[in-house]
Length: 212
Image 1: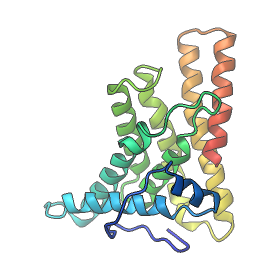
Image 2: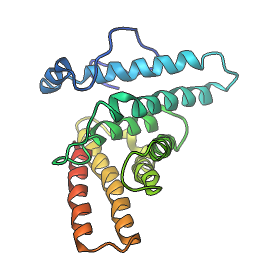
Image 3: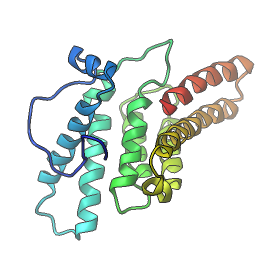
Image 4: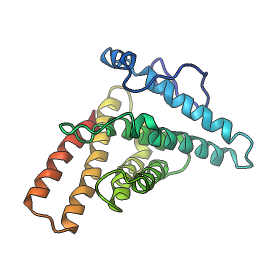
């Protein structure tokens, strides 16, 4: 966390604000993403309350709390139902999904935090019939997590303003990995040139939103 907001495994209760309410959009225009931080903290707080009395070691319990809370946010209606598909901007949902994957890597002791939430997201998306890639839908979510986890050793060490550039590159790289799985599907089904062009155009959009 940084600036005026701090992520923790506890948060005060308060009225919830959806991603695309009018108030949220006004805050985004002003560059204020505090509502998103508050929503994440509420999710972590609910998860903490659920696993407070388990017999797990402190490190394992923290990982369970963080991963459960972030997975619930990824799979909740705020992301899967409230955000509709936008034909002219495919992949814009990863503007929210990739930061949550990075949080999973930063806030857990496990070296595979981002991969775990990506796997849960992929399996759930496949089970719910979301997406057009069948079983490959799972790998579409796992690939960005692998990239984020590979960069995990560098996450706390990037100083000052370089952090912004670092996270832009990391987000774009994670989105590129996601795009690569789409191209792999086209290759697997021996699709024609038109499918490669379509997947490539969608991939460019996703890389943009990943960097964003």
